[in-house]
Length: 142
Image (cartoon, rainbow, N blue to C red; front, top):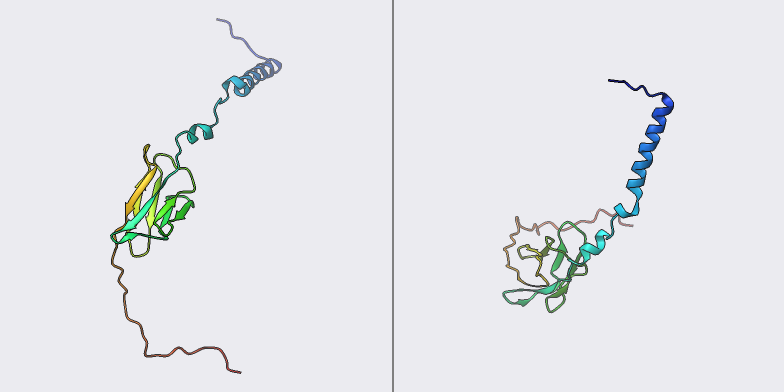
């Protein structure tokens, strides 16, 4: 068996050849993506709207927020909303309103309209107001 010894010049040529081949394959347009990820995702995204009410009728100004983001909207006087951002399956909308339980709604493939009824919750105040002592301003009188 023969042992081949490379000189420094031959090693540089071999390294240069390998680097050139890697660059050729890495930057060749045939190996690049033909579709951008945003076009593929947008086909699965959808507009979502709906109505929010309670036992007495529609609720105005209910917060509707996409969980984990800053995207959101509020309901109008008729309890209707149209979410400003297109949503995809797996996204979660959080409905919240003071005096009512928060509710999470998971978006599925066929979700385009949501009807939700919020349940009221008791809000208890702890302690009592101290109305015996009048408020005194710390400002100096002139």
